[in-house]
Amino acid sequence: MKKKITAVSFIIISAAAIFGSGTYFVNPGNIAVITRAGKIISEPKSAGLHFRIPFIQEVNHINISSLQTWDGSEQLIPTHDKTLISVNTTVAWKISDPVVYFRTLNNLDSTKEYFNKILPDIEKEIVSSSYFNEIVDTNTLARVPYAIANENTTKQLFNLISEKTMEFGIRPSKVQVEIKFEFDPDNIPYGIGPC
Image (cartoon, rainbow, N blue to C red):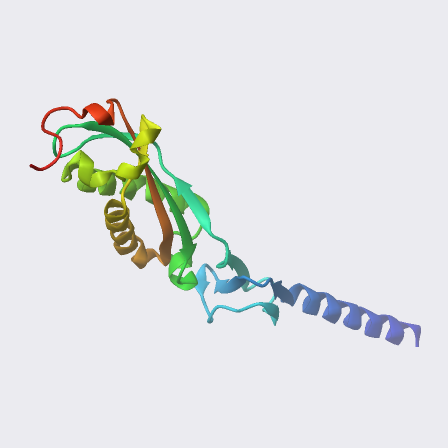
């Protein structure tokens, strides 16, 4: 009789342990991607209590509600009219497609590396093809030697970043560009801007 009770107790405890290790909770604002041997095996799971096969399926939590920020390094770029300016871009972004994000970038470190790779070229493309006064918001020139990029420049950057990040399951929410320059905007050097 004692052996039967011990065996039943062992089975109940084992079943509870397996069930307990198989349940997981997804917090609001997150989703869970379930993988087996590194491959996605089901649709993402939304907030709530879920079950997985213990030791075989892995739960990967992804925060889809938080706004992440990438802050670039200052980069010296000549404008189309050869005015040397320092450009520093900040991008606020979110995960738009968790499955694509998981398959491609997968974490914040690789996402920052990706931004470090693409942003300098995007900045150069826009700045080097524009005149100084086409880039800068003239209302911010009083903050010498800093200014903010105007709406058109910011929109160009936003659109190019959107194109480059779409295939990785992320999208920008906001882009801000700070510009540093070495001259007095009230005494703009000869030749700046289109005639």
